Amino acid sequence: MLAVEEEANRKLAENDPKRALFQHPIGVERITAIQIIRPKEYQPVPAFTYIEKAGVFKSSEGKDWAVEITFDAGRKDQTKDLRPDLPLVIHY
Image (cartoon, rainbow, N blue to C red):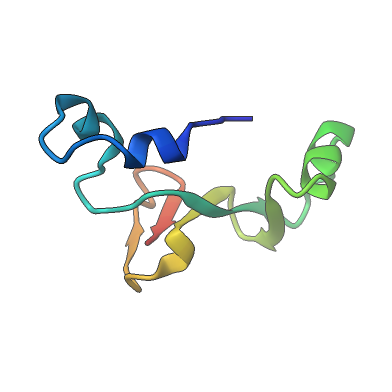
């Protein structure tokens, strides 16, 4: 599990060089959802099922493997689909 001290990061002055480390060029701040798209024929191994039940990600059936990551609950209503080069869809 990744942990950050959000409050400490917010207290950094606007001109503090460390602040740039926590600012993404497209303005995203946090991952709010991870969806694993898996082929219909895939039979989840126990570790996959365990992590899904723990709420780390959700999964659904699809044609091919892919990962969908949502930042900030998709508040900007933007999507970048990197397939077929990379099995990744980003919502922000």
